[in-house]
Structures are given as structure tokens and as C-alpha cells.
Amino acid sequence: MQNAGLAALGLNWRYLAFEVHPDDLRAALEGAKVMDFVGVNLTVPHKLLALEMMDALDESARNWGAVNTVRFEGKDARGRWRPLRDFDDAPRHVRSVGFNTDADALSRALGKDLGLKLAGSRVLLLGAGGAGRTAAMKLASDNVRDLFLVNRTRGKAEAVAREIRRRYPRVTVTVGYPMSSVDLLINATSLGLKPADPLPFDEKKFSVSHADAVYDMIYRPAETRLLRIAAAKGCRTANGLGMLLHQGAQALEIWTGRPAPLEIMHRALAENVLKPE
Image (cartoon, rainbow, N blue to C red; front, side):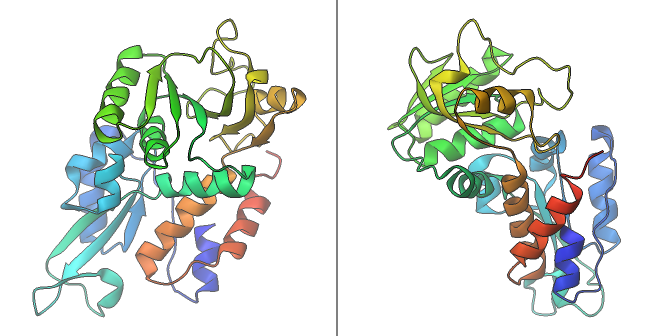
């Protein structure tokens, strides 16, 4: 997706994947900085860890409490911080700035893929980890009416609920399953990545037929067991491909300062992420 976007923009850049152990994240970020990387993306479990490792945080990272995109900036002769793309030669002083593109990408994907208007809706969110916490905060900021949080570790969901009550008092947030139907169920857990995974919720406490729409952040496999069951029950369904596209496109714009070629990036995703393994 990113390499297709870079090619379309005519940039002599390359997007590469590196596997980094959490214990080595700080060293990896410092290495990228001194090697003049324009920026990096971070995925689980690095998004929360990186918050404390950035030299500066964009408002998006402060708002949603996680970093998934880093832009490296240099100090010019006038003492101003500018993206490294603006320099012909490597600057002596470089800093890391953390952004979050996941939250806005989720809202865009829900609107485009499911036709949902979040304001005033009732949502059941499964998962309160890095992705789940960001989703919960974004849903609250989008003025959902009722938000139900379910997490394997109840204490983590309660901590997210307390923060929402403090920051978004108009939203009614409950830790646990709803007693009636919801407009939307979102899976922000990793359950569904493997064929043998159980459903990400307790079927004794909630039935998927009580959700009008179901969104699974997982995009590979394209149809998880949750989505398959939800579709059979007549729910509108979508996987996480749209969220992946929009967070990646926004990251590319942060690095390049130019509009992302969305259709080209989407086509690359469809050809590669969704192809049979």
C-alpha cells in the first residue's frame, strides 16, 4: 500500500517492515532517527510504549493516548523544526514526533463501509487494549450515546471507562454487555486471526443477532468467524481493511506533505492483503 502510494507520488522512497522486540523499541527508534528515516509506523505492542519515547507528541497522539505514526524532524538554520523531507542534507539535530492516525481512520471506515453515523448510537466494543482504548476514546468523541466495554481483563476496561466519564461526560459508558440491542458491535481484539479462535464475546451474555452492524478490525482473514456468523444473522458487516487504508493514507500525508493517492493504495491492498495465502 505505502510503496504503491510512494511510486504514484514519484518519490524515491521505500517502505520496509522490521520486526522489533518491545525491549528494543527505544533503540530501534533512535536508530531510525540517526539513519535519517523520514518516519515509521508502529503496530502492537509498540503503540502505547512509544508515547514515552517521543521527543514531541502531536495533538492526535495526546488525545487518543497511542502512537502509530512517527515523523522525524530536523532543526534548520533558523532554529525551526521541519520534516526531514525538507532538507537536502541531514540536519545535525533531529527529533521524533508521534501521531495517531488510527482514530480518524476508524470513523472514516465505519462511515464509508457501514454507512454509520456514530452520534447518538449504541455501541458494544470488544477489547480495551491499545486498539480498543483508542477506539473507545474516538467513539466517545464522536458522541455515541451508549458505549459498552468488554475486555478479558475487567480492570483495563474500567480504567478506560473512568477516563471517558471524565473527558466525555455526555456519553453513558458501561463495563459489561448490554441488556438490549446495539447499533454496532466492534471487535478490537486479536481473536479471529486464527481459524480455531473462539468468538471474541461470551455467547451466553450476548447474541450477535442483537447488533445491527458488526465491524471487525481484523482484515486477514478477510472474513473472520465473527463476520461470517454476523452476516448469516443478517447484520451489515465490514472488516478492518478500510481502517488500514485510511490510517496508512494519513500517515503517508504526514510524511510527504502531499495528498495520498487513495484509490491506488486501496487497489494495492485489495491485490495483496486479500489474496489467498
